[in-house]
Length: 247
Image (tube, rainbow, N blue to C red; front, side, top):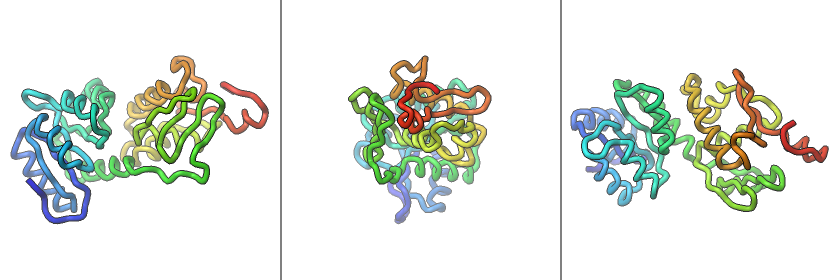
């Protein structure tokens, strides 16, 4: 199925309920998106391989293969942004979806205005960041950040960061030495509509620590300021004074 002629982003909607598919498709086409659909996880995976959508709206509660399993298989070959759609609002389910690689999570029933806002926010985060003049920023002898490739070089080995992880790290580095409140991180990385979604920050900080810290349980770079936010080590001052590690 193909959507109206439009130059907007191509979205894949995955839901086994035809009524919901028609409703969401009609409204999103009115917002300028191009739409394709799938009614099962298997069909969705086939569509992604053949069509390469810009974003997927993926229902959790589907027969045979639910949204979580579909997402797990999807992340084996694609980093396409995914928003999970579900009637579940339990935080454990939300965190589980995010750990599998979802970019956002919206519970039914939802308004089209809210859905469109979330779609734009996720697409915005997925866009590559404009690299600074120096493409590779050296934090110290162990950690460097490659802005062109959105990678970190950790102990001489390269590790790819997902777009949201890279944006979060970039905001922390821009404010190195200063505590960045959780609300500020949510606004700058996810968007103003996410100011109350504090579990997003906790989860992605954990992701970053696993990828950049020698010992994630004893951070060298990203410190938690309990009840306030997070602080990246003041590496510039450390380089000037010859000091390193936690200030």
